[in-house]
Image (spheres, rainbow, N blue to C red):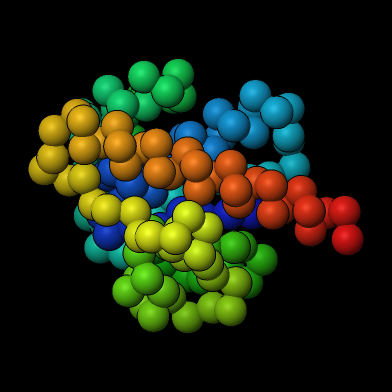
Length: 142
């Protein structure tokens, strides 16, 4: 079983969209041995944002409510994927990568932005997730 945890600041926009977009990608490809979660460095139990839910619907991914979850104890078996380079220093593990390492730039925080900003953010996340899944599939073949 491969475990991946997407991490952002509040777990109300980027990381929850990354989680749900990856779950949809895995379902579409019929991959069942990857467990996906998301957390926030400063999450405090807020709901997923309305614009994130609207955007997830456009991608035909799960768009239901969920309270944000704060990143707690680091699991040595989990690969952590952070939305921006500066978050990497806050998580003490060797099993960590940045979205920048996948697509060449950080994932901007859409919080407070309009639906277009969320949609563009989700497109970047989807692209990064596809690259990450390709890398995971390559590692499996080794």
